[in-house]
Amino acid sequence: MRKMQSENIIEMLHITKEFPGIIANDDITLQLRRGEIHALLGENGAGKSTLMSVLFGLYQPEAGTIKKNGQVVKIHDPNDATALGIGMVHQHFKLIEVFTVLDNIILGAETTKLGFLQKRAARKKVEALSQRYGLKVDLDARVEDITVGMQQRVEILKMLYRDNEILIFDEPTAVLTPQEIDELMETMREFAREGKSILFISHKLNEIMAVADRVTVLRKGKCVGTVETRDTDKQSLSNMMVGRPVQLQVEKEPARPGQVVLDVSHLTVPSRSHKRDAVHDVSFQARAGEIVCVAGIDGNGQSELVYGLTGLEKCSGGKVTLCGKDISHASIRRRGEEMSHIPEDRHKHGLVLDFTLEQNMVLQRFREPEFQGMGFIKRGEVREYAEKLIEQYDVRSGQGPVTVARSMSGGNQQKAIIAREVDREKPLIVAVQPTRGLDVGAIEYIHKQLVAQRDKGRAVLLISLELDEVMSLSDRILVMYEGEIVGELDPKATTVQELGLYMAGAKRMEKKEGEGA
Image (tube, rainbow, N blue to C red; front, top):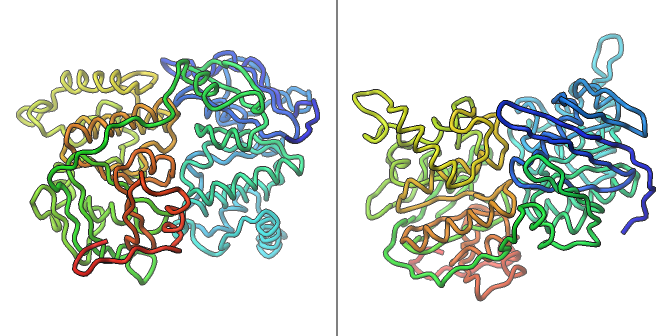
């Protein structure tokens, strides 16, 4: 543990921030020491991102003061925050997709001479920062063509380019692979060794215990307390966060697989960005009453596999059969009526962000007689249904069913999608990173829901980057590497190390003649 100076570089004193129908931050005090990594832990909707948005100038608090180096400061907008040396990597990246990496990094902090951009000097500075911190990126690539892990590096380089000394990371590992997470943790330690101060929002207790010096826990907008990580453990933190004991391990009976629900035969999906196929000659089955997990390092074809199954991407070969019906050429709408889909990108494919919560809850069901008659939506029935799901899944929102989806926290947006998809009771659930960005209490609940759906005789196809989740939740593991299934493993008979070798392409299971992987 590093020895830290006692002085506080940032003090947020008695901060209160309100939104319609909800007090997001209720008299919160947070103190950040110079050179420390300070974690902010709490359930979805506990007020963590709101508090950091107040520090970064995105929101103005109703009450409270902010001090830097003991002096009261006013932060009216992010430009004021940047001038004070405060930078932030947001949970949903703030990048312009059609710009290059370099243009995104220098945007708003351009060096000019006689009205002309001095890009050569900027490039040199970014290259030096990239090399110094091991944040390798292609400066000339367009953001839309790089992985989310690379996009995060761009966001971090944006902060470093502006010489920020206080770095805020909002759920920084939510979209990263295990390898990228390890790299980010080491980068954060390096920042702290150099005297930078880090505020780190996370739900992941393993990461907090590994990297943070202190943890402040928020619950329902209030501060529960601040503890030294060396004096606590994961179970204690989860209890502080949720207010009750939480099961950190998945409990489930052995699977009893039934008939084949999903049969994928020699499926090939072309890649948008490369000449080679994103998914090449993939065959597998998922049966009623089992959870089949597709594991792999991000970018090895898992997303395109799901797009091919759900119709979001056209397949160039192979066959998809669902409950005995060939849906290889079925429309997206028809496939959506036949299966539940918890998508990878909740903003792009999961929600209509400017619709209300109740409208989002019936996106795929509003044509059913229960919710419409003679071409008119039955608003009372829609509201009643939405209220039922909100209560059942503890979806927290300021104005209940009429809350605009965009205004909700990321975790509660995720819970809304899961509530909608699980309640549709389809024979197949395709769940892509279903617990991304969720706290331990919500993860426990979602895992129980998926196991319950399995036990009701549904097939669950789980795509996950979380190795703990893969090992504890799945009944069978399929490993994807470079667009192919290279291994089928039994979670009870394998190890994380062996799984990692398959994911990295170091091991490959031999295909049996005439069979898929």
